Length: 258
Image (tube, rainbow, N blue to C red; front, side, top):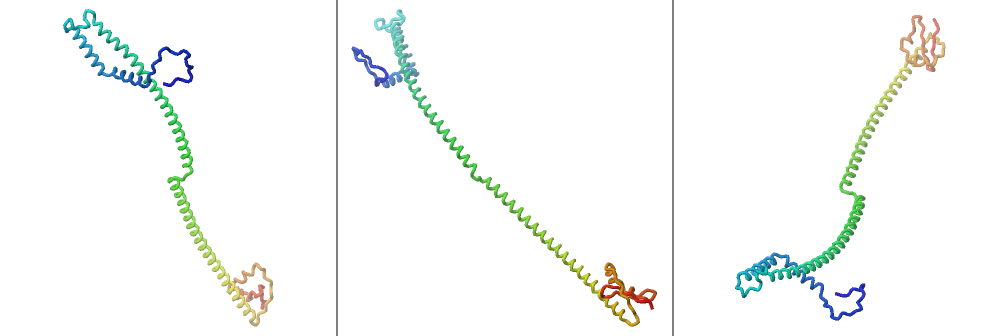
């Protein structure tokens, strides 16, 4: 491992060179031993070792026993204490290595989480921008509604044109009826005028007959139509034998008494 730059170098040189072990190598060894100590295989082998130890020192000949039961199997106790004293530091080394690994993994996870958060924020902004852009784009439902409204407007315009044509036809029919009625009224007036002229002509002829003297009397304009429409017996005269004839100039001729 390289020396740290933020730590000053010691001035005293050690008498014996300190061994420099690779931290990675020692960590791997300690971790492998600690993993083996935590396996069922180690427990099985340790149990088998203790049983063999006890049987040998209990059933073997006296001269072959190296750990007597009278001493409480002191050697076995020392062996188990030695194994425990070495196992504890190895487990601590393995834990430290695991702690370092967890720290590095936590840093990586934190970096990855920050990157994911940044990506998520970027995607959220992009999605918001797409939503804003899509709000200005005509969707299928919007186009359908617009076409439906346009079709309804066209149908309403067509119905209005048809109603206008019908009203125009009715107005033309009424106009034709009115013109026909006015023509009939005009013809009736012309017929009345002709009848009045015929009556006037008859009155002239009767006036021009011999033995009849006439005196011109002005006729009130309001009575002129009445005189024009008078029947023939008015012209013939009353019981006195007199006769009144309407002249052409609108005056009434009154005959003298005989």
